[in-house]
Image (tube, rainbow, N blue to C red):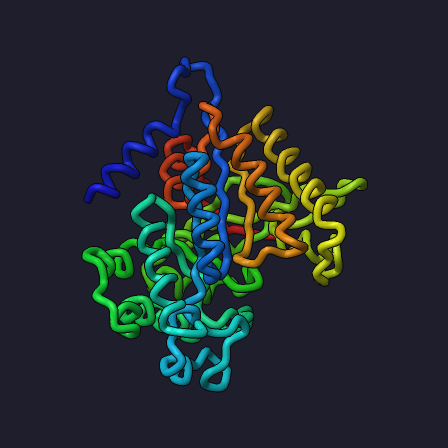
Length: 331
């Protein structure tokens, strides 16, 4: 109940700056998200970054990172053999215990805990039943996670699992999965999806009761060639997906400039929310996490900027009358 009141109050405060007049523009929203949400050191690092800058993030959790060595043998994704995962599993029960603590405390700190399914498989050919099966596995894994590593779960955990996980992002941004995925999301109780890619920062659209967000293409590099605003895509562009620590400062600066210019364009313009995505992997020597830290430290303290989770952004966007009832489309 406290979190619901807190979120409602926050939504009202995000509509206009504290010293605003009726002619002022709305706050610039910035939405930072992380896919996978596994490495405990990066859980700590991201939470500290957020706390230092008054930001809330969204964590799209892959549920195999809460599966013990025993539980992983029983996991079977649609059309896959038992015990398979494209991103692996937890390596020990102690690792899971630490991760559960990070997830729970992030939730208490106001961050959004959301779903990235389980084994990170490309579901663009999956049926509605396939998606529903994976969502059910995600839900049951979280419901039983504390018990599976012999820990007493905190009061409120089941409420979070049953009622507090509102969002989903498809592995590989498989937005082309289309109506089957959306129908399964709705049946699973999700209210938003963040799997699209858009040609630039764009307002979300509502499709079959699901609010759909997209990571934007943003100009990057000397030629300002568009790239998805996500660390992995920068990693592939900068070093062809191969770790290159020697040029980490160059990559950091390029990423920061791209992030900041994308922010500045919206901040000085129509103030469409800016979304940027990251992973719990420090690619190219941590270049993209450092660029993120620079951006968050620069913009999140401003009175007319709000660095918020997806769940916090939705009521603000609705209040502005910017949510369209239309068929979503990506690139």
